[in-house]
Image 1 (cartoon, rainbow, N blue to C red):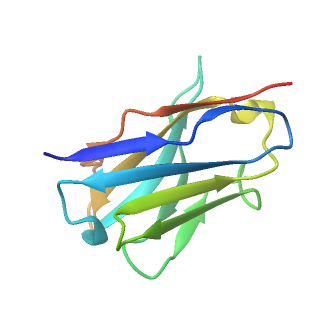
Image 2: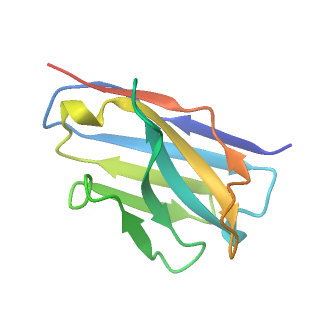
Image 3: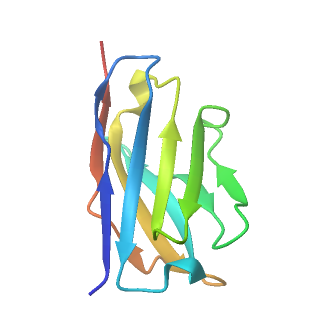
Length: 119
């Protein structure tokens, strides 16, 4: 049974930090590209960051460059999103997603974790 389980969300003040984790099971994690998406109320779901299956190459949305860092530990089947200098506009449900190398379609989604940035 495939599972992607996010954790680490919560309420944080502007300028603060959070670290999200996504634990994967049920598939060969090291052969999947992993991404973090976010969905804010009234907006479309957007990709935040993506990391290659191996090697650590990553891409970021312009809105989070320099503030967020995606990483993964293939030995632990886990992908992370370190979020620093958080802004109110970062408030959203954050979900991790997995797709096979060489394919565009997302194969698996997590259930999401709420991140709220507010004073």
